[in-house]
Image (cartoon, rainbow, N blue to C red; front, side, top):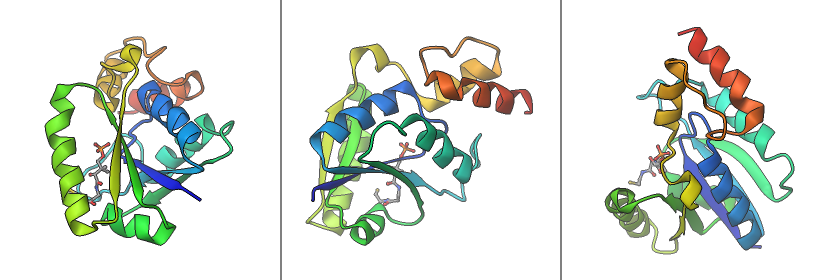
Length: 160
Ligand code: PNS
């Protein structure tokens, strides 16, 4: 079975992430969305909330699982029996950082491959940070994130 891991912070999941998840689920037998637990970075949503939001929006895709991880991605992957990392590329500006990470991961474990998927044009400007900023200042986040999580984001930013 070909298992791939799609890692990220997902604070919160956006339509750009969801598009990559859906497309990877067509290419791999199993896709594990790996949500990074990062104690150094306080997010808008805590880790359990992020996992639950993603689970809610992928519930119709049978070969997708959502799990959190801490520490090195390659250790999580070994634990899951996965050899492929999926990353989305939005623009040339993403390339340098992603290239560096992919080289580091293959240096740490030469059996690991990173597969890059180009983000769909309609999502190419999207990021979790910009969604948070728009929501915080009362802008409309429809079409930026899945409809079913919009109320959660609005509620969360209204308590800040
Ligand atoms: O959504 P993000 O914040 O761009 O995702 C970054 C992520 C989680 C993919 C990356 O920070 C990561 O893999 N962190 C785990 C630590 C690790 O394995 N570092 C070594 C590669 S440089």
